[in-house]
View (cartoon, rainbow, N blue to C red):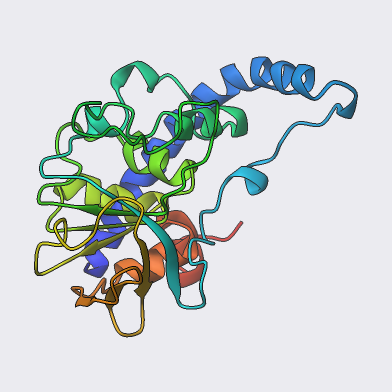
Length: 243
């Protein structure tokens, strides 16, 4: 990812953030009342730091470890987060959590009997790593797609290829590390296998079978996601003011 790509991403992200802020201003009072009601005597609204792991996605040193969720080719953004849930505002903590609870809900039950997020009221996924075929994230340009996966605990996707805008939204939001694999992996893993992505060796290991596979370098995407997205990366890099 070139510096020009980052700069353009910052401009686009700033416009998106302004829109989200206007929407959030209209919604936050209602969400605050709901949060207070649920917590009764606590009278405390949950904060984004409590529910959002952006900037803290690596969970095993310089790596990510956990169960994998395997999907096929051409998984589009309608399957990742259907349009009916796009009214949820990711900058509002309660709505951010709700958005995550619907991640991958558009996948057909016949092909995916195991749900990415359990339908028992859970807000979190058991699968921090998604293994996918080609063209993951195709369809609309909605940035809610990587946010939904990240909001429920998703940390990385390892796919044969990505839709360009989805790939960019992963780094812009800081929600996911979008790894690419030079060889198909959907037949090398099954949902529920334990895996570890090593950022130093740029490999993914199926800890269930012991097999290890190379990944294409993340390049400049890694420090952007490490920082928590384009805005925070730009601040740390001096591209925009920290004020």
